[in-house]
Amino acid sequence: LALVMQIIGENLERYDDEYHPPIGESVSDIDMVKYLMKINHLHQKDLADIFGSQANVSKFLNGERGLGKNTILGLKKKFGISADFFI
Image (cartoon, rainbow, N blue to C red; front, side, top):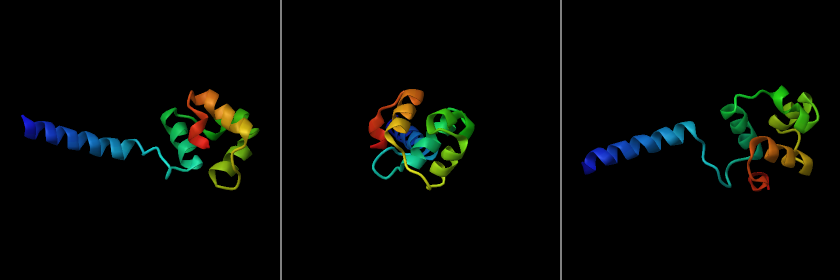
């Protein structure tokens, strides 16, 4: 039984690593927003109201623009997460 539990645990860990990126210091704001967009099936146009325009979303996702205070608050409200993810 212990061997079966070990195999199941290893498979779960492998699955989690593949489909759920780690959240921590190494995850950039861009990676976090892309992940949130992916799991919520959203496109750039769906975040245009938060960033001010779809062009601004694109600039952010391409690393040409950072996150401001109001954008972080908008992301916090939209996804129901802590603003700490972006600070």
